[in-house]
Image 1: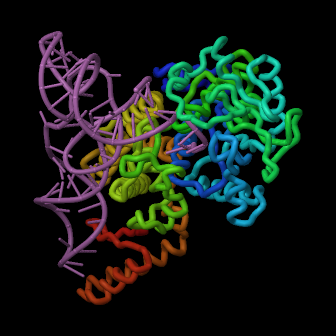
Image 2: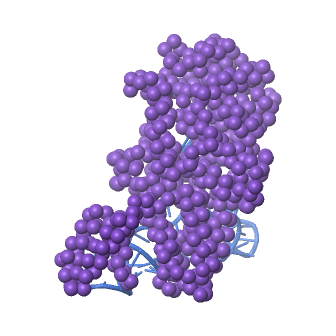
Image 3: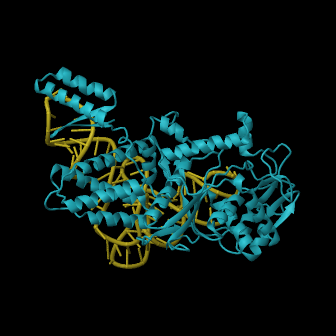
Length: 491
RNA sequence: GGUCUCGUGGCCGAGUGGCUAGGCACAGGUCUGCAAAACCUCGUACAGCGGUUCGAAUCCGCUCGAGACCUCCA
């Protein structure tokens, strides 16, 4: 069994402090992240938590932890709002597209997976669906009812926030107090099944037209939104597990409700470390479904959206996300994306250059310093932008080594290679997008053309020389005339 | 109205008391038949005002501005 190699500090939303990460049962780590509700294409806002927690998952594993990573798929349609009226989101989409709700769920689960694969996001170890855990959810409702923290009303079951708050503080995650919440309730609906506006549904009685429904002791209906994560988290990770992640917009009410449900059922806190990624913004405003200002990942990858000047590749997006710390907002713009694209390419070119370096007898560089600095950054609440900054520093060294102004002996070269591949590929999860299609045949054909061009140039036959250069460029291949001959790369 | 973030050089974006991250753009240079690409070099910025301190982007107060959550949302 591996030793745990790093001391990691992470910011816990629950305590609002950075804390040392000490799992409940090392080396095992249980991590749960809120996945998507599958009723639409994934957008940039979905990419952020996926990439963020992917890196955390990768890093914890790298450090020697045995991680069980659970990320759910919400496939029960939940109501558009918490009022008693309203169609659920999946059913609405199903009606619009004339499909079975489960067809909607499957379609968008598939496209979500496809997008995440493109972003090189590792699949979680368990990806449970809410509809596959109705029994667990029913059991949880019963438990909460039995403990006196819920009540039945018109076939629905609601969590009794006020009663809960008498015994346990409600609002510990979001820093709210119930009386403050109640002082400014937006809710104005006259008649409600709920005793208090801040009570939330554990089980909802289905309207006659509601398609997704299951039998229960109280009614034919469906589970409340917050319930699935409590039920599935406990099912696969235990009543108290280590890390729960998600977007900051889920802190209230979703995660707050999760805590209340779990505490009401089991009498203990479900999660030790709550981690939340910040939002992707566009023109300084949150990108979100309700605002309608989102850009889907397919649109970004294809460039097919009026706000996009061009297409941006999956690695471009991944790098863009990682260049900001996960708890900062990340503002979308064409300019920022194009800057990230160039930076990403520079990094990858340096990696390729690194492979071509030959060791010198002595060394003017200490690669261990880089290595340690990168670990230090990751250990400090997964500070990927700082890791990237360190790698860029190393890019200079690599280029200087190529130019001969910096010397790397065999040992330093090896450490540098290891560090680069570890952080760039294993931990940050980037891939060299251009490397894959680099077949031997292509390689040699281009080499041949370069040689012919070289001969033409020797004859000062510029027409032939430029023709080869220009036509290759049209094929997406760029020739780079340098001091030591001509190199090439994909555009 | 409540709770809470944030405001860093042209843009993005790190940084919690002294050691001026990094990327992109700009500029200069190297290379080159021309070009492109690449590479090298280069910027003391921290919303405003006041305070604490030997010293503040970093701590405190106020002002201005932006945003998040309080309804579904990653």
